[in-house]
Image 1 (tube, rainbow, N blue to C red):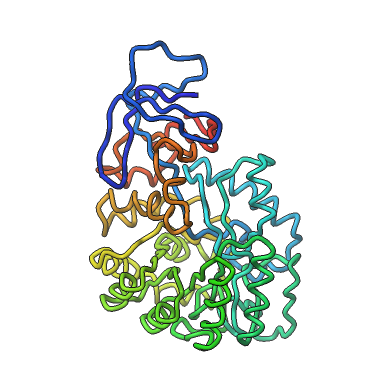
Image 2 (cartoon, rainbow, N blue to C red; image 1 turned 45 degrees about the horizontal axis):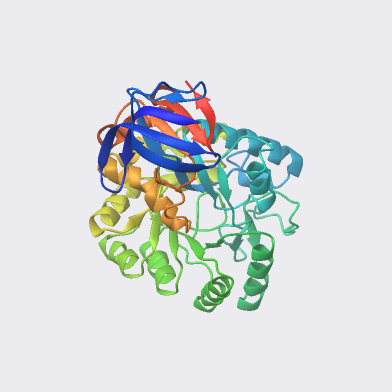
Length: 404
């Protein structure tokens, strides 16, 4: 299949090349050249008046979260959770997200099923369960519950692991099971009802052990952290990606650059949780925490952008709230230029995943993941917040997944 007479968008150079022909062969882009007057083949896609973008990358999703009440998820049957996850993965693909990184909950079996074409969905990078100290952000037990069932068959985003040696063993098991990165809960959070947002979680020795073990296995550590103290400590100890980071200032933004680390803001989840969280199961204790981090998110993004930090695209939506995933584009446009937002969802995300040149670009040899939009996203990035109206087609793994 070829895409004919399309304008090709390059997020890195901020250039648009008009009247191009993109030649696909299976799951690869074979060539990107100036088009000709040659008649189209029957299976060619007419891109006249459209803009070809690299498929979007969301670096922070939770595809196995069926509800905003993450404790409730742990009581659901794995088959039920998987069915919901597959439905949501298909919906993400229709929004233009051809690659997603699950930040706690999904395992490699789900990723393998998508790669095999069992169901339509994006490429899926997984960490398995996020690792949490007792009483940390991944410990979802209510105060009156004492038993924690960490069996792999039990749904949930987190696993409770205490101590450097136990962390090393857990990471070895996660990598053996197919994790491509390790998620550490390093500060309090919203979904966990028994910790404080400003709490620092895991000791320095525990974090060092986790970073060392992950590094020796060829993977990296991502850290859930909100506060300046939690973020600065994580970066100092070798954590490679900061998830959320809503309360950071200019100093922490500079540290991101100095440590060659990535920030993965997730602005939309706080807006949506404030508006709809209680209706979709968010506990009252969690609702009270949303305001503490929501208002700082845009400021933190601005600090990171001005410092020149690597900023990836993330959303962190739960359950029925996943449908508002694309609104992250419009929220970021309040702070960043359109081209910078587009890079976060393409080239920067690809580098974070270790897939630069393979994902996030439209070039010969890259994966055949593309989005055709109706407007130039460099100047109209906010329009991507409404994918049904803005996205004309999605090509995933060289096949047309959506055509509107």
